[in-house]
Length: 168
Image 1 (cartoon, one colour):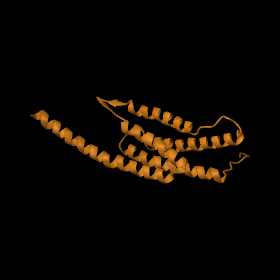
Image 2 (spheres, one colour):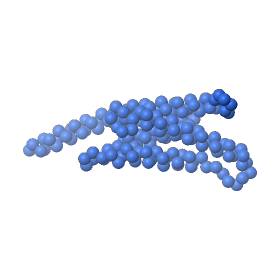
Image 3 (tube, helix red, strand yellow):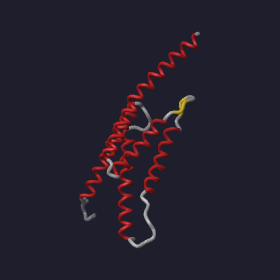
Image 4 (cartoon, helix red, strand yellow):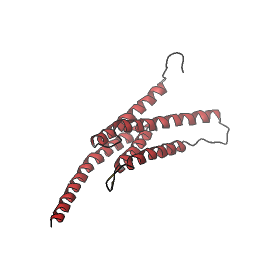
């Protein structure tokens, strides 16, 4: 309701809380990507996660309004289409991080996957699965940090092995 000042009702405040939780989860994942020097960092992950939550929340509200206005209609709203649109949009964003190549290797696959997962986390918060979203965020951070360390050790081992092979 807009009458000179912005009024937020209890539902708006609840939705803002969900979006803030989503933004925090995205920010946590974005911090790791930022530390790793990847092209999609904190801000990107915050916007992807919060944006996904916002689109799901708005989509749910649109479906509710449609169902209230069209109770006798044969036409039915499909909330899954909202999720499909988010997945398609985020996939394009993720693809943009993969295009960047250095030498012969492909860069950006993990960042693209993280962006994809971040969108899912936002959707989970929007559909009142906050515990699941927080658990997945924690799992993703563990994978990014700990398996990142393992990957670096494997790379150093392989580089040392290749150097030794070249000297022979």
